[in-house]
Image (cartoon, rainbow, N blue to C red; front, side, top):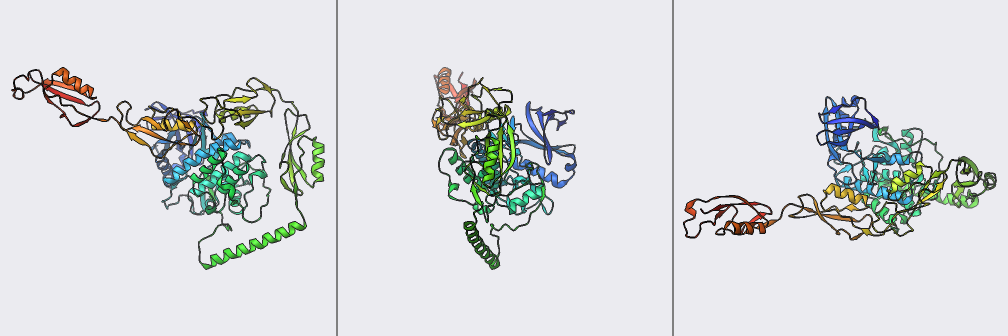
Amino acid sequence: MEPVSDPRIYSSRYQVTHLIARGGMAMVYRAQDLLLNRAVALKILYPELSADAAFVERFRREAQAAANLSHPNIVPVFDWGEDDGTYFIVMELIEGTSLADVLRGSRTLTAARSAQIVAPVAAALSYAHKNGVVHRDVKPGNILITADGQVKVTDFGIAQAVAAEDHLAEAGSVMGTATYFSPEQAEGAAVDGRSDVYSLGVVLYEMVVGRPPFIGDSPVEVSSQHVHSTVPRPSEFSSTVPHDLEAIIMEALAKNPAQRYQSADEFRADLLRFSEGQPVRASQRDVAFFGADATRAVSAVSAGERTQAVPIMTGPRTDVRRRGGRSGLIAALVVVVLAAAAGIGYFALANKTPATTSMPNVVGKKVSDAIATLTADGLTVGTTVQVASKFPAGQVIFTRPAAGATVTKGQAVTLRVSLGQSAPPVTVPDLTGLSLTDAESELVSKSLVPKLSTTQSAPPGTTPNTVFNQSPTAGTTAHAGDTVTLFVLAPGQTYSMPGLAGMTTLQAAATLGQDGLTLASQSIQKCSNTVASGLVIATVPPQGSPVKSGQAIELVTSSGYCQVVVPTVVGDTQGAASAALTGAGLLVGQVTTADPSLCTTPGTSGTVATQSIPGGSYALYNTSVDLTMCP
């Protein structure tokens, strides 16, 4: 963040202090809410756009859409308004980093960590979809990770209610970020929640591979590939991607929405199954391919992150059944027949002239020997990357594709070759107690390689996504490229339910998210004489109970004071009346002298003549009861 030269105050309340980021439509600042004395994020529409009624309308709708979404994994919107022709939105300030920053430089995350981050994003999108809002711009830059590891989705910048029929993008264009477009979004067709599922699948792909499935020289080229090109399997770029996670990614990236996960909830459920080591539903299907499964060479252009208007692509997407009459059915049958014929021809030719081979294992060989082996197998050497490592100089330490993978004759192979321990040594930092995200970022910043492990038993009190041990230990001398193993709670392992009593619902939701738990869609309300209205009384299951990551927790919140039966104190002395009222949970209010006409019976002097709330009726706990006393 950079300090601003002009700390302007908007609407006499929000004073900007630092510039956080520049987006496609607005600039985001850190600001101080002078009324509530808290830091907030202020999103300000560009001045040149404020004069455009269509852009202002989109900006207004963003505020309304986001303000109506209250979920622990969605950045809340506090306020929006206009100041001297400048439009702004006030949001919660997230202290942390974006997923885009984590992935910058083609960094990757472990499969387990990737699933742990994407699952809460899917939960947030599911909640939005159920409230009639499609995000339309899911990308790493709109996924934030707080300092304590909680995941939040932000910037419903081009989201709009599904029921809305107006379109604010120019005719013949569509708003969004081309790298993460769904095919139907790139075509300018109607979208629903399954479009967000596709975009989130692209994000997950990038997290485990280090690049999105399609890259190109321009947004137009990338969006065209989403419509026309086959999605390459993640394992073509990284042999470390588990089969089950690859199956999940490929189902999310099916070009036909009917073949994808039909909801973000389904997507999330499979991710949780993967995290817990259970069989995933997607492994039984293979839906992202249609036609030949060919690896395509694309230019190495960084993924575009800017939200912008992109020309609509035209089909055909031959895997998508379009609405129509008999001609559409006949066309579909022709496609099936031709595809079958092509398949038969392919296999016939493949049996005659094998075009593939198995990637040889050259890891550990000298680079000259590795090149000779690859050449002998009909392969070529593509990019050679030299890195400092603990291995001898000139030794191959990594190949892409990996050994054993199916490769095509003539295919280029990427080699990573050791420079030896030429880089200065680094000291392994202490990572215990850090969130997994922070620990991984710390290691990457020191050129060390994080490795996730769940093999050790976690000590009592350990929560998910928190490092409880490491190898090697803090203070050990290491070299660039060395691996540091991070030990975290094993998937499916139980841990203690945290205490939430006395928290607000938002505080409770944040605590649950930090501990790998989710907030149930329903809550229970009970009256309480000790917990203020709206605060948490208890949870289901209760504090200390064994819970598992991803488990939904119900909150029991206070609806306010309980009702009590008012005792009859007429005829009692003041002391006895006070004792009876306080014993029932009530207060003694004003005590005044009664009208003498109410005290004509002998022996009533000094006793209660009337009470403001009749005996036997109900009143809220701590309600005051006024008394009149006979003189």
